[in-house]
Image 1 (cartoon, rainbow, N blue to C red):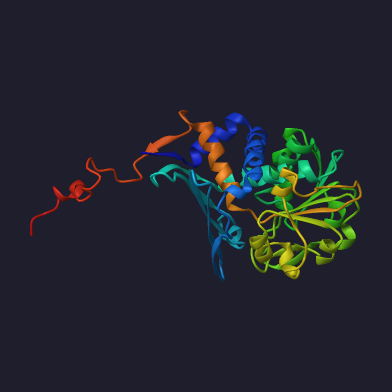
Image 2 (tube, rainbow, N blue to C red; image 1 turned 135 degrees about the vertical axis):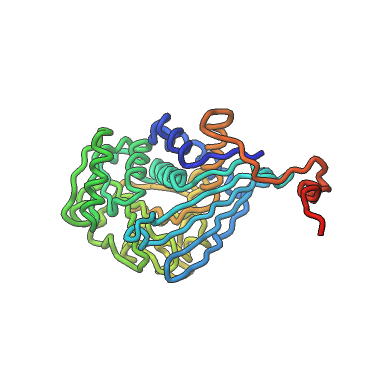
Length: 342
C-alpha cells in the first residue's frame, strides 16, 4: 500500500498547523538538504512546451529516496476558471522502487516556494529589513509574505498588481493575520523604500515589471516569477549591478532572469553560501538577487517534510497504487482466474 495525502487532507493538515508554521518547519528541512546539495542527482526539469503553457516533470534522488513532481504552468488558465499552476508528486524508496507517498503538490509547492524564499532571505537580506514590496498578488503572494515574516519578521507590505481584485483578495487574506498592508498605485510605488522586493507575475513573456531605477542599494530581490524560457520580470540592468544567486545554474540559464545574459555571466549557487564555499551578503549596500525558478531538490524536501509530519496521522490514507501479488513472479495470477474461456 502507498500513503496518500490528497487536497482535503493537505488543507486540514496545513490549517491545523497554520501556514506560517508549516513554512518555518520546511525551512529547516530545506537548510539540511541545500547543505548536502552535491549528494543529489541534479538535472534541469523535463519540459513540454505548447502554445497553451508548459507541463514539466521534476525528478531527483539522494540515492536513498527518489522523488518527482508533475507540474503545469498555463498563464491563461484563470480566465478559463482554472489555476495557473497545479501539481502532484511522489516519493519512493530506491531500494525496491516502490512508492512511499503520493501527494497533492499545488498547495505544497506554494509552501515550499515560500520556504525557499525565506531560507534565502535569511542569508541574503539585510537582517534589519522591515518592509516588503510585492509585484504580483496571485496564488503565491500570501505564502511569500508569510515566508518573509517567518524569516525576517517583516509585517509591513506594499503590494501592486494589474488586477485590483487580486490585490483586494491579498488584503482580505492577510490583514486578519496582523500584516500592515498598503495597496500601491504602481510597481514603483510598491517598491519605494522596500528592503525586500518579491516579483511574482504570471504572464509568459519577456517582461520588465521591476525597472533598474526602482532598485536601491541594500535591497534583496526575490525574483520568483521567471520560471520558463521566454519569461522574465527584471530589467537586465539590475543584474549587472547585483550579486545573483541561483538554485541550479544550468536550469536557471534556460528559465531564469539570467536567460537574458550570456553564459559567462557570473552567478553563485545558493547551497555554496550555506556550506561556506561562497560569500552571501558582504555589505549593507549590496544588492542581492535570488533568481529562483524552482528546483527538484526543493520538491524532494517538501515531500520528505510532509512524509515525516503526517506519518501515522489522520491526514493520510492508504491506497493500493501498486499491484502486489502473493507470488511476486505471478502477476497474471491476480487476474487470470477471472479471465473468460474463449
